Image (cartoon, rainbow, N blue to C red):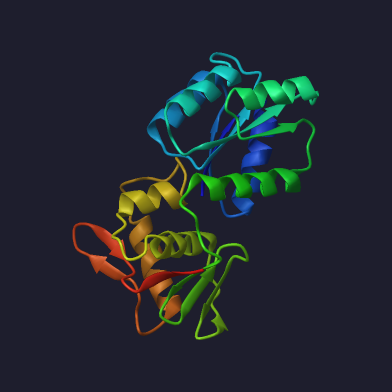
Length: 224
């Protein structure tokens, strides 16, 4: 999942970003409202972690802009005030959730994951292609019942491909959905990751290369 953190306290923003990356998420950071607006305008994020009190464009205004855009992006607001009135006001702006500072990081992770599930088409408990199964909730992959040890990026690529249900996914889309803004679009990162993923999954291969278009898993299905 792709996350944007808009927080002007740089140490806090960096700490949240590091923590979410450890959870396997692709994370971008903006340190003021204007930068956050610019990034949210050009990249589809699953969740925006948004501080209300920002320099430049306020968090409230940015929240309104995201909601007005019609994007599926979900917004969780962070604030130093946890009063009922403030929570009601934040939610009335269109925010999907609200968390007062200071907060427990595990709670933030749980809330971000819950919002991300609402930002994308409903994902079933397990994604499958042949005898390969991926469980997004447990972050596990098995083949013929045997565990397959994948890196976070390999897991992310496989999850996106399986969730596409047989449709072609371009390298550019994989780069956007699995990596963050620091990824070089001209590198062979995606190709190399797909190559190592294929090796770990073994034979028969389940990932097809569609020349000039991207990759797909033809047999991908959703297990309800």
